[in-house]
Image 1 (cartoon, rainbow, N blue to C red):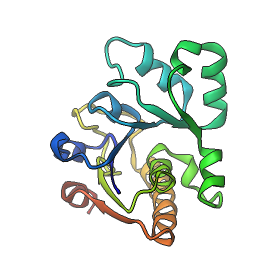
Image 2 (image 1 turned 45 degrees about the vertical axis):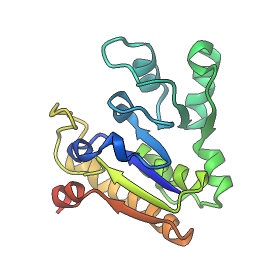
Image 3 (image 1 turned 120 degrees about the vertical axis):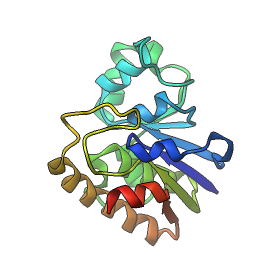
Length: 182
């Protein structure tokens, strides 16, 4: 099964909705640009911002993969946001795919790789996981997108890639992602 994993880096622009694969997992704000089946997003404040904010709403009503505390805060405080969606926590993913806590569960993009394994992916096509620079897919600069973050997130990403390899899942990053990251 082909899973397209969409994140917020500039190479997201290379994604073609017409060739989306069997499932699409959007990471953070990428789910505001493309319709996704699943949304990998770590913190409840960002879930709420994109679920309730008319300026940059999530497209459709994807299922959600997040940290357990975030899911519980949403469920308790915003039942309408929680309703009519499947939710899986990163802790449940860890148990489901026998994934040791090795850092993949610290960031939304690596957690999306593990979600794809859980969902039965055989191949994952990755767009927007560039981990360089401060701009997102729309050209907006973000202070939190910096080299210090990218060093930590690359370690987490590599941990998730190891898990994918052990599960026999092939991961392809978009050509632009590879170009941007080198």
